[in-house]
Image (cartoon, rainbow, N blue to C red; front, side, top):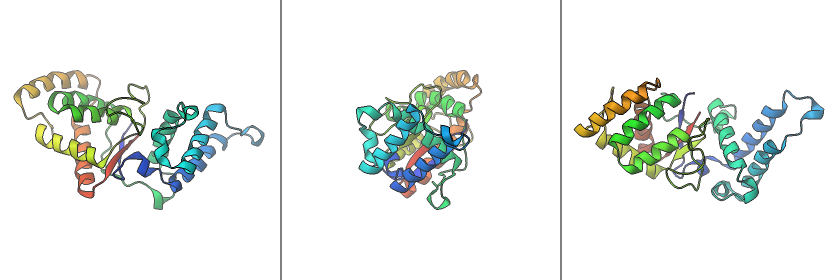
Length: 232
């Protein structure tokens, strides 16, 4: 599964979820689940209806509510993130409202997982934690490196704020060399990374592909003062 890196407002996901996008998503979501169902059977089941109800709540109260949803909606948050991810990747909403790609390079999920070993051996803790959100997903209001979406079979939507984008950019520049290999610049880190990369590549992920895509994306986003959104 490829990971698409989109430019986002500085605050991350909540800035993406404008009333217009939420309205378009709501219509798309209902159509996806009812278009091939007989008219007398188009009522959504409980879990699907919970996603629609959560979207309606966000439309009434604002997208920032996603960081602190009422208890009745908490189980629907991950489902909403999964479906939003599909919505953004497929780009079936209005072209005028489409998200801009930060780079045309789309690493595979296995690439970003393999790169986690390189990040872990070379970069400081803040970027190690942020990388987890690229690999596994993130909901607003989560502590960095923790929470919804981690170690799930299907990774969820993730994001970095503009501040976090600059942190990742600075850490990659300081601790990794450039293309084509993106090797750690310090000797001990390089030795450790060679071992870890060998283990990662055994799963057929290519760390350099992910590191190249992220390097391009954070450079562009930092220049534009933007955040990044990760969808697959």
